[in-house]
Length: 377
Ligand SMILES: [Mn+2]
Image (cartoon, rainbow, N blue to C red; front, side):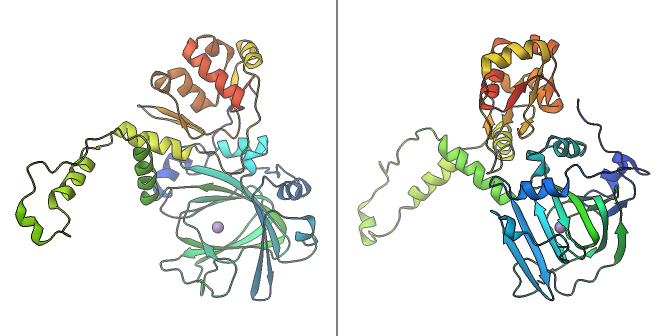
């Protein structure tokens, strides 16, 4: 079952996206009424100690801050009653089905932009200090209370000598306390400082937006790997005895030769889509899929359908499709059935029954790789 998209009470998703998204913050009281934490403090601490989990501890002592990064040991976590510390666990959606389901309620923003769900637990007075992020974020209060101070930051100045990026002279313009179920949206460039008012837990739904230079680097890299052999440079008919006056001079037409070769590369829109798809579906470093049995999966899928692993990333557009960093070859890359699987993250037995041999072969490979599993949730 696909979870219901999050309603934005009083505004609705359409108005939110038009008026607030990437523009200005919004505090949504009671966005998830009756919110209960999906993981207990103990579960979260256990998760933070695993070596396939990205986590850190931030502790404040007076004006000085201390940060400990994963791999964390039990002794890196101060006592729960010790004030002014916080544990941040990144990518909890990769490890917990309930949290993955909560993240999917934010799919009113395209998957290409959705990054992960981070959970922070804080003791009284805990937080990560005033800072500004480059990305959009939804901050969902899951348990206890937190005081937020927020304000726009044009040119961030950072406090010197700290192990994390803290704003110097942060001048918040709003100040409020959130309770379980409250949701705060912050666009990039808004400074924020959240301090736990008693023990609390906050879920951060994070987004990503690739910078242009990173996309170009990837595009050029891919193009380099796929280059066809090109004719060799020739200076037939171009040399003259007078060039001997400057034998060290690089021939101008050799420069033109390279420029012309480059101009002929002309990537198509499908090439751009492919690079984006492969880049954006690349699994996070710590993700390891467990291999499955393709024949067994096919047998069960015929009766109970199929679902994507919660860690699988899949994107498609009109020209193609990518899954976990790989492009789906030609025809299958435009398959309506596989597009449905990508959007709904599952297909039922009746839909599976209509799969072509090529689609079945791909699905079998994905089940074998652990990217998809027989049976729906
Ligand atoms: Mn932040």
